[in-house]
Length: 169
Image (cartoon, rainbow, N blue to C red):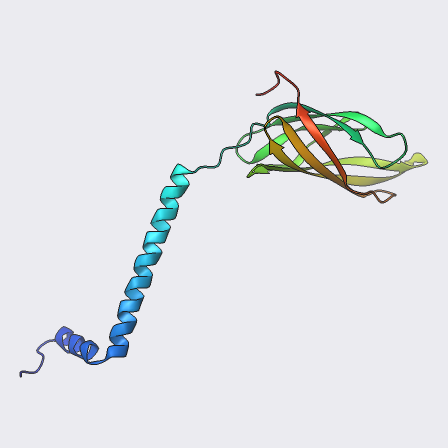
């Protein structure tokens, strides 16, 4: 038997004579192949299964009973935007407020609105942040609203908003 002539031949002979190294090379090749296949399959699946934005654009109404005495209000929500972005207005105690940090994804809608709360006169006020979390299904959105800040504690409020017919955009 003749000695290997090139470096490549010598390396190949060492690998063949060492089963641990050969096994590691085979295992590494399998891992790389699986990783490549998985990434390609995910990319193809993303092309086919793109998430569609729920049709929330337009006007919505909800009857909301807040957590204090005689506090039932008819509130209006107006949503605009595309992709994950949501902007528009929401009424709180009948007054319009801008939607901030609005996002819709996987059928879930989240945004905040801010108001001011006074204690006695308007010289003593605090900001209140209202966090809305909604689950969109067809022509209704089931919300939970949590308010924080201000002068008093509030419990989360659950309500359902319904699309105003003919206002889809």
